[in-house]
Length: 372
Ligand code: GTP
Ligand code: MG
Image 1 (cartoon, protein in one colour):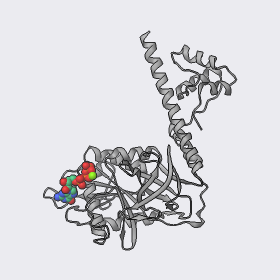
Image 2 (cartoon, rainbow, N blue to C red):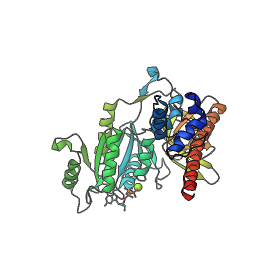
Image 3 (cartoon, helix red, strand yellow):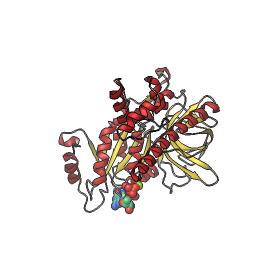
Image 4 (cartoon, helix red, strand yellow):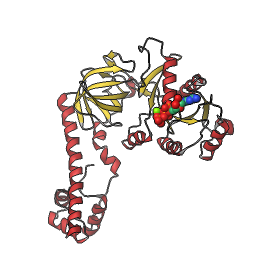
């Protein structure tokens, strides 16, 4: 499943690296024996040498270690887990305000020490059922998550401002949401505003194959106001209805697997990763690997800012203890030993570096040949 270097390819088809390089050179492709071969190069070489070359797609390749980390799924310990809901929408349509309002209206006062600061992910309770929400700081983060195959989201809420309607980013979000293949709910926000027009929003969305239920389609449109809080209960009930159908389940006893939804380097604390647990239970002391970073969970702060010993299914918190800042959308996976965690991270880092290096070598050779 890994990339193949020129000399490895040569070895595999009983040629010398020089022969491989010569063929490519003849076609104006400069490679050295340690370079990784690109898809088109592999195809050409296959034709040239009369051998069959199967090229796996890039995404599969990028996740090759994730495949290796994938354990056999044992459903005996499965329990129902709360849904993870991602809020997306055009800039300024009220994603963050809506999330803040949901949080403040659903958290007993004092519990969070007075919620003023916005956080990216949190869990609330609606009628004793938990829901985890994730804010998106722009659609870019979501697509990078998707590209890495980290489908953390169970339900997508598209926020559209009732006084503004469908805008460019709304359209982008619609295509992301469709590709994600999970239930979509449209929250028509800012219903308190004078120019609010839910029918306009419905018509614009229907044009984009997002037809409202009351118009004969299958998408729920819920009018809300992040300002007054109107409609929020309806929205939450709807989320619970949609997620019930999904029959979400996971194993709290499995090796912890979580998705990074936010990360940063904090003064005095080091790398901090906000994660959502997808399977298992993540505990203080766990050896973890997260893409090319690794470490041991030193501390966990939950979404209420409290230090906790563990995070359960669909719960979210901030993790301290990684040796570097991981990218959003990457998986954090618990390992049996610190050696295992370090080995996986190091292998990945080497792989990434080698790939980067082969790219830059090629560029510089091309630049050089342009100069000659
Ligand atoms: P980005 O994260 O920048 O994409 O924006 P956002 O979608 O998170 O929007 P945000 O919550 O920051 O709200 C943008 C503006 O709209 C703010 O000034 C909010 O006060 C206002 N706003 C949000 N929701 C409502 C609402 O329901 N009613 C009214 N009247 N104003 C709202
Ligand atoms: Mg926002």
